[in-house]
Length: 264
Image (cartoon, rainbow, N blue to C red):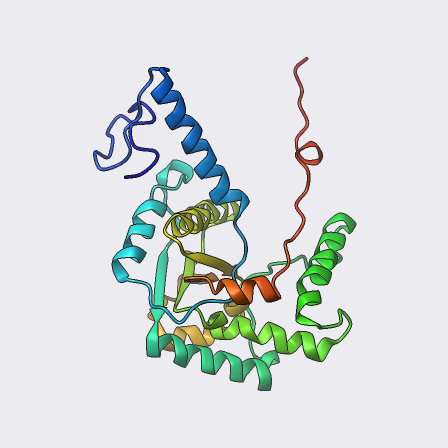
């Protein structure tokens, strides 16, 4: 049973009767349930990481559908739900796409491009450039790759294109006439998938890199001409041994550096 069950009152005008029920009384039992719910939800977020190592264990289709069932409740402007399509690829289909992307990345990367810019075309503002540089130092150190070794870094980045050997990969698209607001809504959807996956013992990593090879993806998937390939996500059961060996915790900004209060 979910730790959220019977923790909060029903407030939705048309509640999902299969979802956790919410109560308003503040007796000791209810308070305990609230405490447990906070601990679980905080742990799901605070212990989240980008997983790059997975066990060769398949993910049941029913679990994937459960995760999408949760994520579809993510907020979106005027309920537009702009996550146009989620293409779930596994098995031989995923392996074939991965082989072609890896080959293209090794032989003719200049022949491919994404349909949008993830980073600015010009200089990145200093505070963001510094954080990106610091990410590189933390990321490459356990891999014994010098930050200035471009060839070694390229070999490491190639793993993006075989989906880090995860058993499941998702390709997300958005309609090409939608703008920034809808892209933010897609972010809500992805975050919801990430948390729902973690609650089920799975880990994920979101990737922009495969979007560069959207022409290859279109050869294998029925992606419409009006769809922009936005990004992908890998999902699977984490290989905790390799994660402990090769991963480094990335620093996050302090609360005081993020929020500023105004009350008068």
